[in-house]
Length: 321
Image 1: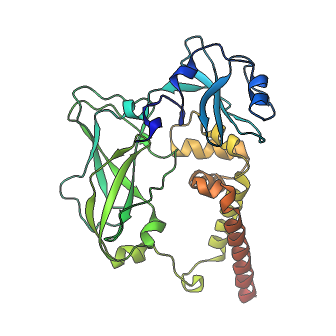
Image 2 (image 1 turned 90 degrees about the vertical axis):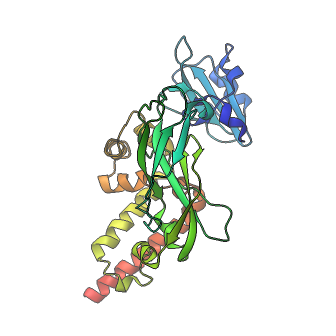
């Protein structure tokens, strides 16, 4: 069991309940004591370490007298401080917020449905009404082959639709989101699908499925772009999207600020386009990127892909000439 599972949350940060008490200290003093340089913040007093982490600390200061909303940031020794531009509402732990919820596969679920064809029920098995606390109903799935005992779940924190209240015995049926690139790497045959309600960490029972050749081919890109019918326009579009994600890697605080308060995918994309001063296509690419895409670890791979696209486009132009 994750020890942070029982801790209250500010956004996705787990925080120590005891740290929410007390008067705190000046922001400047706390940050310098943590080995970093201060930055401008909305409030100067009341800051404290909310959760010590291996590579740094989550810090915060109350934004109201009841301490139900907090200014939150992170600090790493020798690095810059990051602070959110709007206060976060204090919410219950994942364990508290998922209490009573379970995942149940619907009867008649086709075992060969493919990556876009699976759905699951989120059911309230508790004795009282379940109320969402800013949560979403977002279920991700991962497939394990016959010889695999572990699966890798891939998901984005901004994904999902707003959750709805459920009385005892009520359920909501939602799609299971499976990474198409991962599906394309599977081998045909019998497999097991595991589903996870994120970020509340509700796990469903493993579902035996059949991975068909047709479902793999449907999501697998052609090995030769020349034979795929890929046009210069489509290559240009991907190149622009790759560049947009590459440029966005250094603007994570702006991305978080843009997403604050948005409720739908369209709202999020529009807000990011305005904040980052990019077009809608680029904003959509950033919005749908995985966190790894924005991490420095993927920078070399992205540069190689951009160079590959530029070369392919030049070859296409040479053929056209």
